[in-house]
Length: 224
Image (cartoon, rainbow, N blue to C red):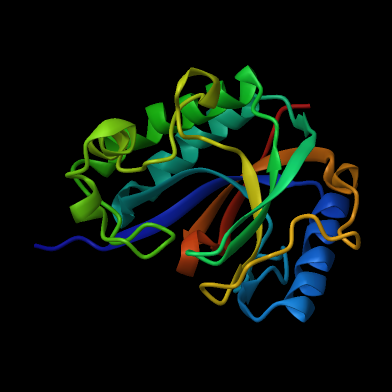
C-alpha cells in the first residue's frame, strides 16, 4: 500500500513588519528584472511567504501529527531570533536573489533540533528535486559535504558554515529568469539594515516550486 507523502519546508517566519519589507522589495525587484516567482503574502493560503529555510523534507501524511507535536516542543524551548542582514546575493544560473543573514550558533542549534526530531519520520524518503530543480536521487550520489548531508538527512544545506557546513541563512526575495544578472552594487538598492529584524515563529509549509513556502499549514510561536 502506497502512502501519501507531504513535501514540506520547515522555516523561520519573520515578524509581520519585516515580512512586509521583504515582500515590498521583492515586488520592486520584480519590476526591474523578469521574475518567475516573487514574494506576495504571509497568510495561510496559497502565497509565497518570506522565510528562512531550516529543513526541506518529505513526511508520510500519517506522521504529520507526530511532526507537529515534536516541532511544537522545539518552538516552545526556542526564543525568537533577532538577525542582522549581511549582504544581498544572487545566483544567475539558478535565478535566485536573496538577502543573507548572520548565522549565530543558536540558529545552528535550531536547525539541528528540527532535523533531529523530523528526520526519523522521513525514513528513506527523498524529495523529488532540490530548489534548483536537480533530482535528489542523483544528488544523493555526490561526494563531499552536500552528498553526505543528503544521505544523512535528505537535505543538503545543513551545518554551521563556520565549520564547513552548508546552512547559510537567507530569505529568497525573487526567483528570476535563469541567466539574469542582478547588479548587486546598484546605488538604488536599499540599506541592508532595512532587513534587520526578528524571526518569531517556526512554520510548517507545503514545499512549493524553487523551494518556496507555498502554503502555511502551521505557525508555531517561538517562546516568549
